[in-house]
Length: 428
Ligand code: MG
Image 1 (spheres, rainbow, N blue to C red):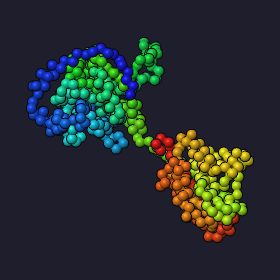
Image 2: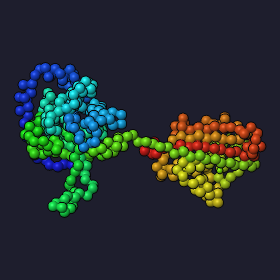
Image 3: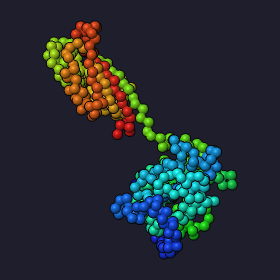
Image 4: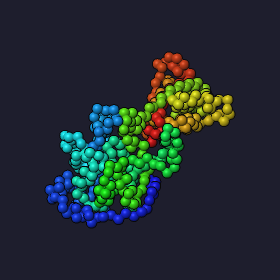
């Protein structure tokens, strides 16, 4: 992930302060962490891996969200807003401990193993301090501080933050500002240059000792934790942020974030095709690219493969691109005696250009003779190979019309096909 270096001023980390502070912590608290996460100090989940701690700030009242209670405890797509972040951190192999800072009581039993609940403070900054205070860990432990109101936390963002911490004192996800910015000065609207401006998100990553020291020195309530580190001249890096980390602030944000976090809805497209070819003197017919011995052949400009012609029409129909005659007119000499694989492949290419891939198909051949059943598997295999589908996604069936109609009189062969196409995003 692209990293944007903001400054390279070294920070002198006052580790000695934390070392002495750690000595004063109670053995009881150490036991608490060992009980919660026994492998924390003795066996990292991967050899050589430094486990990180996560602090989720969930102490706010969220008065602008339009909800009766705090927004972080509202339901979003079936689970609490806060739980989205807890789950994201819990799933990450490098996160060993999660601290939730919340003012709401009765929550201490939630969250499961490795999740500690501590009371929030009167301000966001104080809540973060409360969370940091319970971390009885080495001062160089990476700490990710995250707002519970940003439920769209991905594993990639966590990994990228921790990786970037190798060469920085603080890392945060950020997005460039794309909207025009204006400010009102004495009733006059002025344009603010947006070059070099970023929207900074959370989680923000730090070393435990450094952020604890910076926040102790900062004093006042800060807009975020990075602000405390900036004042120390620390090396701060920004990594590419994620629109899904949008912060829930206003009532409409619930719907927006729900849309961002919803799985891609792959609505399929379905097409139907039908084709008929008459018999003429010959010794075989071609169906689904397979030559089948018969006492006649199918009459047509191309190889007269009625099954694949029907399938080609089904695919074209699913993406509303006309029919086989539009793309391969019989009047065109190029298609004389042509292999119908050409038509089928072209219909697949055209569908893909529209953003759709064939996901399954069902072909029915209608005739009295030749007997199709002995050749059905070969026809399925040939079609599956051409479409690049699993054999289980390709169906070939055969039926008669009980002696009725032109197929019953053995004058020719009819074929029907249905093709299901899905958006390429879902198919891959
Ligand atoms: Mg045809």
